[in-house]
Image (cartoon, rainbow, N blue to C red; front, top):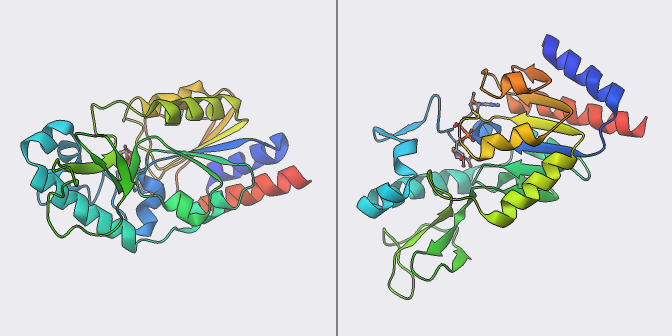
Length: 242
Ligand code: NAD
């Protein structure tokens, strides 16, 4: 048994947290078969993910960017929520603040999900700004809106602003939480990563690797999300019903 997990579970039992926020990144979906950006599997046709998820890349070469997105959208369509998504969804009142664009928290049945970086199965017209759900593969790449302009994935690219409403909801939830569980994020993508420091109180990181957020957290559990999140959620539920 992981010594930090023991300590984290003890802290949960002592504090009986009633408002838990899960702050998640790509690692929470790794065990659903969706590659993270950093680490193994972060490359696609020799491109780094960070070089494709930018407005500049889209302006220069929308076809290549869309081909990459169609590959990722197919992975997301075929993926199923894993044990971590399901455990989080089973905790009444929990809020999920996610950097993920895969929609797996919602598909697992999570009650409140704040998507900081949008959703990959939604698209937006670059001229008119209208968004709509478009989960199926497009026949023609890059796809176009009825108005003739390019469509783009409705996600936040590196260098773009986060949606105001999502940021506001995330800040309220994180400030008001008595437990923050930080799962599967490298903690280097700002401003999202900076939200972790808004939290005062008990915080637990779940990530097989150390990150810049590790020292900010009360406990760091070096493990995979699907292996330990269910135990953490069980401990929260038991503590709250004790
Ligand atoms: P990242 O790719 O930068 O880092 C992934 C982190 O997950 C790493 O720290 C890694 O150690 C950890 N990790 C890997 N496997 C894990 C597991 N099984 N359990 C727990 N942790 C694990 O991801 P990020 O910090 O979310 O930032 C990258 C950006 O990429 C985000 O903005 C996000 O929108 C986007 N992204 C999203 C998805 C998705 O929606 N599934 C996938 C890739 C990237």
